[in-house]
Length: 405
Ligand SMILES: *[C@@H]1O[C@H](CO)[C@@H](O)[C@H](O)[C@H]1NC(C)=O
Ligand SMILES: *[C@@H]1O[C@H](CO)[C@@H](O)[C@H](O)[C@H]1NC(C)=O
Ligand SMILES: *[C@@H]1O[C@H](CO)[C@@H](O)[C@H](O)[C@H]1NC(C)=O
Image (cartoon, rainbow, N blue to C red; front, side, top):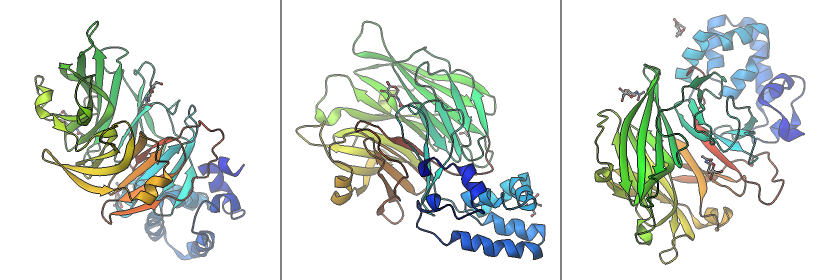
């Protein structure tokens, strides 16, 4: 089946035939010819020049180049190459789309080549696990016990398990975030846990737990009781500050169902009085998704109808400036229609300059470029919707060769 072609088998097949199935996912069909031209140059090029040239290839082609011959294979898998090429490659974030509601199978989308690749994710067992990513690393947490955590590089498949985070077992809600320091390649993973105070409908026990890859240990940095609000599963770290959405319990008008709070991970005050950092959302939302774009907080939200806040009437993108939201864009109506206007919740994530938005009901994927303020559908994902209630979701990550957990 053409949908099942994996990264690796494509790599092997490529020089046998031009793998018609795979190429049909893309707009670029000349690639095979170009690669053949490079092969003949191989004879005259010394290693260091060849290394330079290969390092300008897009990531998926680097892996395929490794299949050409032993010499190329040695070059593209050497530590020197992986480190050095990462400075050359200008990559845009990829989007991994899950295609079934249970198994974590799916495809990764490269927005530069406009191609989908069948890659297997390491560690993750189900597509409903919590996922966060930063700078080439992706963190997974299981959705049953919330005690299994892994950090991996989905491109090189290098993977590491973390200890179970401290705090209440089986919290009602958890939010996962990860933040990589590009210079040192160290990272932090945060988990925000919310558990209802027994027999008290309005009070929620909220705690923040932080893993530091340098000490390889967890610490509980904050523990507080919220009244009238609870946290959910939406959080992100930007520039050392952990942001997460909170949701009002019962009371509050239609404009007041979501709010944003922030917690400074650098000062790590154990008594921060979270509600002092409260920022109301810009309008009534059906759902909100937080993301880090160049260390700035961006929110993508479903805009609710004024009188019926659960009904979506559009999708907006806002940037947080200080404590004010600045509207960056609204999804044009023709794209919004393409989504099925009834989906009040959807998946969205982004990094760098790109934001991906995906409805849960279909494999359609929309890409928004923050620099060009430009909307575009992705190339069609090579997946077939098999049954009416099949769900799709996904996440965005930076494809990087050199980073390892
Ligand atoms: C990168 O390449 C240069 C020369 O091409 C080499 O001296 C250096 O050691 C390489 N970097 C790494 C991390 O291997
Ligand atoms: C975790 O599982 C619950 C219950 O099935 C589901 O509602 C929630 O969306 C899941 N979380 C994630 C991150 O998929
Ligand atoms: C991780 O958190 C610690 C403690 O708050 C901080 O000192 C460190 O800079 C953080 N590292 C990253 C990669 O953000």
